[in-house]
Length: 369
Image 1 (tube, rainbow, N blue to C red):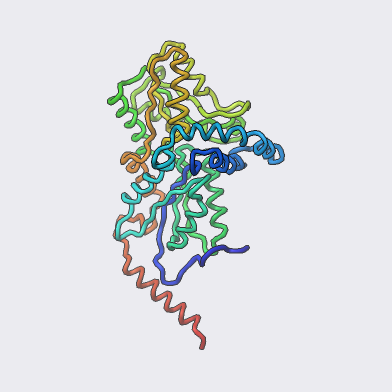
Image 2: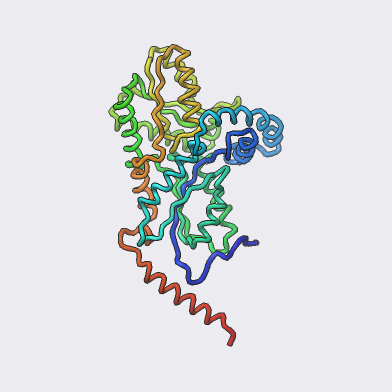
């Protein structure tokens, strides 16, 4: 094993803890070339596409990337902002908000964000944390519901990066937070706030990103976790069974995915006489191409074409103070027992003195007699 980069430990340095938020990723720019690079990394992940590589890679490079890159670049261009893609902007701001909420002068705690695909990569951010002396690492994938296609892929990438460290940090990994009361309350409150501002539709649709049905049959719990979270939010809103429904979006290819499909559902609801439809996407921590362009754009058009009047998309929690407050109890609970998460003041001076003495002892040990 070859350990790359600078030494993993500098004697006399102050040890730190870090929280790493990891989201899916985004192209560096809304251009065909940048989108192609992003899709190549994303669609090459065996966690995402569970097909034999000899079958899948020729199809990916020969058909999918040439055709999909240009089409996806056009879609990204429609949602791009002056600051960048919505997913990147909101994830970065959310990490900064959590940094302000968690860290104090007495607690050397760092909050960073990385992307599973694209930049900043998990490996590059972990290298930065290693240089800063991080010895305790809490990883939060920004997927409320676990799936092997998302959360497990983040775990793979984190472990692969840490394999290059000589001295690996203490590692904690949050696999999901769909049952977190503070998060469920925040989602329900965001729906209420939207209703107060824009009025209430006749039906509330929970739309989650889909996965192939055979993944579910192979044991992926994602389908069940989505239904559980939707029921909890609907209960908090006091909705009866006829006032809400659930669907899955973003399917690709000819294979059967989790049903019902969102595009078919919005058309069906319109044909059944629903004139005003509200849509919330609790599987997305922040807004992105799949919410801004696919739901608020494409599916709103499908709804109107089928006879509906207004499809009102309820934004994700994004980088709101409510989202920060919803994630704080989760992070504090999983960080429990680490001094940086302890409510008592962090004894920085005492720790630095102890580490300085340790460094001095090491120097004396290394010195020739």
